[in-house]
Length: 434
Ligand SMILES: C[S@@+](CC[C@H](N)C(=O)[O-])C[C@H]1O[C@@H](n2cnc3c(N)ncnc32)[C@H](O)[C@@H]1O
Ligand code: SF4
Image (cartoon, rainbow, N blue to C red):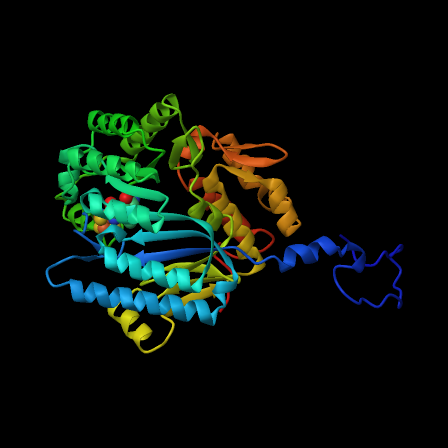
């Protein structure tokens, strides 16, 4: 796209620049696309769990005695926040494509509390046959809860299994057993929902044999989708202190990579194909839309304590303090605590770094969105990654190789750093503004 058609390099005083881009590029189809309402994802955070697992970095509250009143109060705040934000940002005008109940463990909520949240969502949003996902821990998924999820229209259940080895699970502080896990998976499947099982590679006590056992049980469970998370240790996890005090050793990075490589090989043989670098689905179908579309830049509103969202070019997060969250909402305020307005560079970098999670990154779509071939912004980094066997480059796409999949977000991190500095002498870092 060019502006004036200036034929020589001689200065000319003519040619008033009325607009950009020039009108010859304007099309009626653009208006049709513009007036279509923008789709929206909803994320609902439930910060409660049966126990705090030793590896977990999420900010969660355990269910001690007498927590019922506290949870009821949190759910009331959640419902009030949904009403307030929907009105304030006119979210009710946007068709809702996905709803994700994450945590924490959303299935610890009582049927009444789940119904209250559903009611308020139905009142304030236009639901466009949404994908509705609920995260569950096996011990919390009993028959009556499964029946209730089905009645509410939940069409995806993501089960946190982590390992099918009772010994490995016991060392995480969880109370699930293999038997309970398999029962809960069957219950989840019986609701007709698409079922995902989360495994974690690199947990304390895992060995090649125990890991292989877990992978086989996961395949035999015949669920639609299998996810393998690489165990990450953050300062707020029980593992962190134990590692610091040398009372714990974890499988090494090499062990973890070998575990993941084994899982990928067995999953592929069993017909589970990678749809992102950590999720493998039957025949490559049943792709979860919630995370996928948010990695591709679709707007998401996050409700609940510490929930994240992306709306109108802003990344947003609610306060992470539970009592402050409830107090703010009860005072009639939005509980938003921090955010950042993404610059054009941030949007490009976000699209690339998160888009690589989906294994194949569409160069043509990036060019349509931003007007650049992504390679023109980070060719040396892409060439280095290709030389290391981590990515493959075609005229249409940048794709993770098998080795690239194994190394998780490494490629995404490298490409993000390259885009953050492209055309500047600045150190890597987001350029977003207040
Ligand atoms: C919010 S939890 C899922 C539901 C439920 N709370 C449970 O654990 O059964 C989401 C998933 O995050 C993963 N996860 C938690 N802590 C992790 C860590 N430190 N490293 C990698 N994955 C982790 C686990 O696989 C877990 O199933
Ligand atoms: S892994 Fe799941 S159950 Fe365990 S503390 Fe984290 S969110 Fe809660």
